[in-house]
Image 1 (cartoon, rainbow, N blue to C red):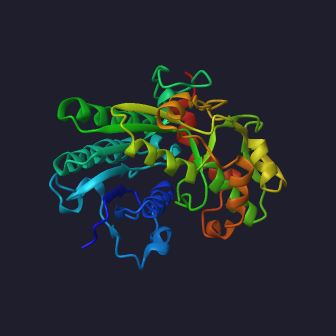
Image 2 (tube, helix red, strand yellow; image 1 turned 30 degrees about the horizontal axis):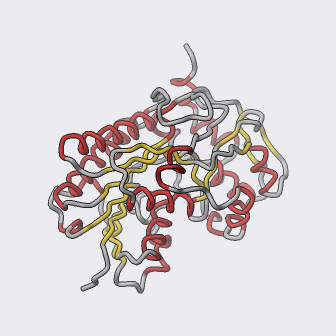
Length: 333
């Protein structure tokens, strides 16, 4: 039996979770991965397949009972599992609430009975809505769509378990994570996956609006480092905004991907012109700062672009179909 400290990573075969597993292995942990493989991919863990200290439990987080043996002796829990695609939450809100809220409650109960040292929750900056920028952790909450609501209510559960059961927790509100091994699910989602598949197919980039909107993109290995810092720190019961603190425009992304033909799509209601994390708190309290520049991060992705060759190819007509309900429900009445 391994004498290494044990960490549990939910959604550990997914995008950020897979990189979290990598980081924990590098830090000397044995890692128990929970992933239903609906959005995650076993290939994201392929480098650990011969490592007996990394095990994959192929289960939905909602199927766990509070005293599940998988959590026995675990020191840290990193909770990334849930549904991450934003646009489809308009169509299927109940499933989002079930997975992202009740699923989180299940993991909190497992962590509570295991007596873990720290539970770190992957929250979302979408809770701020159309926020003032740069956005700090005290900004008013304004959840604009079901995905944002589900992630925020999951976070509220995390802090409730801290308040009532004294479970040591921290929550990190991720702004715009990107990097290798990001989702290639069938849902219309994050701009990187859409653009990379279009580049492979030599199709026009589908830019929403005029492309001047900016996003606070942070490379995924920097995300994993931040979560680990939150786990091993003495801070408890804290919320941290996580971004690079340096917003980049969609047009700049197109440029770094090599440029090419662009098709402009209607701007979507309820989406901010700018996301920009004020990272003062996480820098001062956890000693974390981003290390990978946007240019370096995009270069790393382009070096692994074949990963997206089997992702869905989105074109203006299919995007219009996927976002029809979004426009219907999110447009100002």
